Length: 579
Image (cartoon, rainbow, N blue to C red; front, top):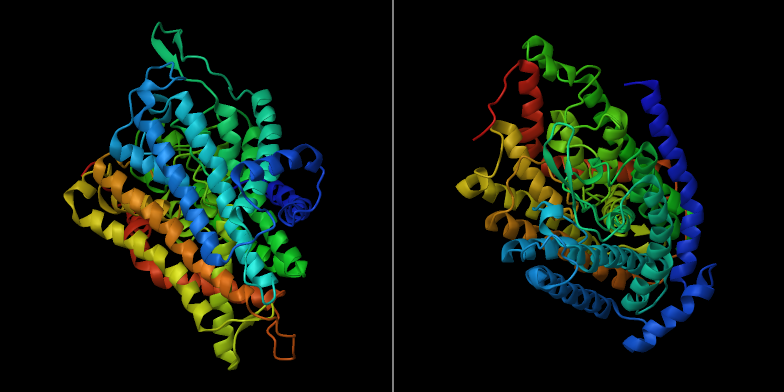
């Protein structure tokens, strides 16, 4: 670890914190329907879309209606995206003449992008045409992100409203999020990306002759427009297989900084939106503090483990080239233009959020460093998290934490003046526990079937971690991969697709039920027995509940993977590559 590395981490934290209040204030005004600087240009378009769609923006929805609208919209998006892939060979904007996508891969990819996961079992530049990339994948990067934020707004209204039957209007929330927040930022930052060298064209791939006389095909296309929303919307699916390690997606230190700021910006700002809407910004800062504590713990652990390097390289007298990758830390699988500090920071950020973009290969991380992204996703990516999903996932843990606090003092738990009764606690636990059921259940299935174990590229605990990471990433709607896994086969495409569906929608329904229940309740006045939820005690309680819940649930699986791999590495026990 170096001073320069820590200064870069500190710079990122300062810039992120400075974005929160102005962005949070702007988002609050957008969702309240108030006038903003962009209203003169966008408001006529917004009204026109409502008239065209037959939507009354003043009519709000009960939580069940809100959920049905969201599910219907998502299903329609799935059908369209699936059809685009299956008909790809007959559609325009396909200069490479790519064939239709296979049924199982089309199913996996469609579920992946409608759930904000962006898991990619394929090589994008050799599988998807420009039309599918733009009209299919990029469009759903916008819509799935807007859906997540809309859902978070529904839960926030549940806490902020008194005796209300509605939690908002899904169509209005999604439209405003797309028009006023996602699109303006993407247009501006997309131009910055083009300035930095990210391609944005519809040209065919370029055939070149290298200095050695070899032939190489250089892929290009509408990259910048997809790059920005994949980060801002915490989607993560890259135009290229190497994702943000590719110089066309992430060409410089400046673009790397912009990308990691985009990943956290909306998730962090939503904590401020929460505070503003419940009438006390300190409540939002308390939620932000919980996220920040967990974020820094992951960053420090990853940076420390990668900077230390693999102690066995020198002891085992491996070849000189491999030893060079450990000089000053573990540089295997990393871009030299980013180094260890920015790679560790990117790894932590992308798995804290439901982004999944990578600027280094997670399969090359040392065991303890590789455990950090696993834990981040296992906890439900509540550490700033996906746009919207991070906040509502965190608020489920807050409900459980306040229930625990109520048990300790013998008082009915409450949060922000709303009594938390059996229904809310049960729904919160259901939303939290559905994730490990999918993550561990599918991993157990793959671990005992030859078709599952046969897809791994490594033996021993690392191979198990590859399988575990795949289902954790899919269920957590993250989309990053540990690599080393041949997942583009029907078994993995189908089971991972199901895991993505479970992780997105079976968590959303209990959350919306909580929103509807809380919105109907009156606010109880603060009394001497009210637990303060805007200070350090609250932050510590929520962090403790999150870590205890995660530890009890996932420690056995982590012990079979990264923990035993770390102990084996230090003991000098290595595992052959292969099955």
